[in-house]
Length: 581
Image (cartoon, rainbow, N blue to C red; front, top):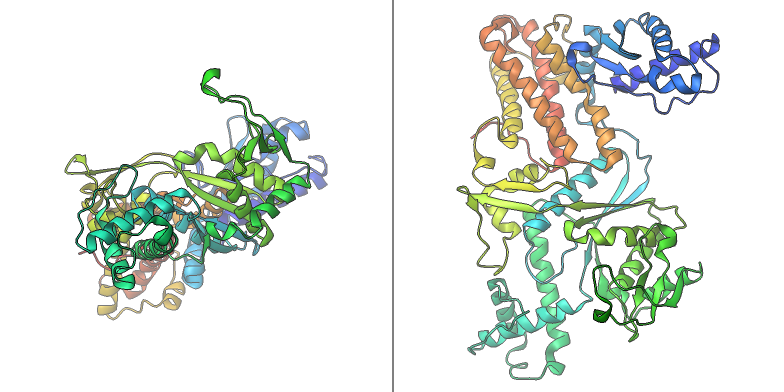
């Protein structure tokens, strides 16, 4: 049940009726007609902009349309009042029975309440994390991992067929650097003293890898030239780091459907095939780029390169895909990788990048647009930096990692549930402050606690009701007489529950899972407000002594809230609390 969709359907039905009567022109598009919560709850339960968006194409005053529409809507038993406000906004107040029906729908549908087929089974590839396999994941990767994972779950809940994918950046020079760093740890495992030159990875996390290499090959590589060991150590080290990364992701509750190796693109003709596809479209040429902005001409030499006409697909400048020395640019394998995604038949692609990849957005979108002839949209989400604090001070780098705070540092401090929820308390492109003290404190200012406490409170009520011999199964609660649910605080809570299906569709349409965290915080606030009022007004308490029927009616509302909180936390990858410790 989606009451907002139902009322919108009623609005468009009555608009059609007005057109049939000649009060509106035939053939008007209702695509921009919305039904949503009003900005001020005092104005009503819902509001529609129908008259405002139809006035110009209908060549009528918005207020005239609104008054005619209000008269028709008021005749529906679900609508108590339909009031025209300002130049033509229409505010609706719904009958209490509507909110009772919402509660019954939640209890009947359970975890499927709000689930939709908006995605129509369309196949979406969500690529996220995709960190270089040179060490453990850091806190920046944590945010991208949580965001990507929650987005994938959200899209699946909205009816898409989702593939979660990790692109292993194992084709560049950084993996050679990893191999050399592991080799130094290997020599160290053989008792040699080593020094780490600038540019290598000195973190302690490679000690175990060096020891493992020793156990595998003995002293075969000791004091041998790179030509003997580089390739083998590179493969060994990459596998070891990917095992470490998988462990990090598992600690955060993230499981990928596919790991795709960049190295698999080299020497296999895949890069050449992708560029040939662009060349066949007339989008590859030999040319010289203008000097980069901000550089003096003497700092730059014009070189002929192989270029992609990315400007024909929305980019600012054309981009090189092959250097003047014949080697590929970083962009070339990325084109090939996305060509592979297009060839796999995905209907849409989503990439989750760190904020430092902002300059890559336009060129990557241009490549996918060109490769798919504009048929496969690519949405690139940038995750901004995370600043860590503890005891009011910036959280120091990890000794194990050497240069950064790791994902495991964060998860070990506060657990995966807190980590995931907090990472979604800001929109992905906004900076995030993560304070280890605040995310563990038990207060309204801590959104994780506030939402979990609401769920735990409801579970406590259910346990007490069961102990008192009151039937609390969903079927029984759904059959309870909910006609007494008329208090403003109860209606407010039920109305917030009713927003859930609408909120889910908006979040899925915009690829913004943070909306769920925001909504759950607001829903928890309405639950706590009703609970606190029950302290002063006993008739509002969920559990009414010696009155099982009334208790069941009130518990039905609380149970509906717990279902939505549990479902929402599940999408975010957070386990709901049964009781607070």
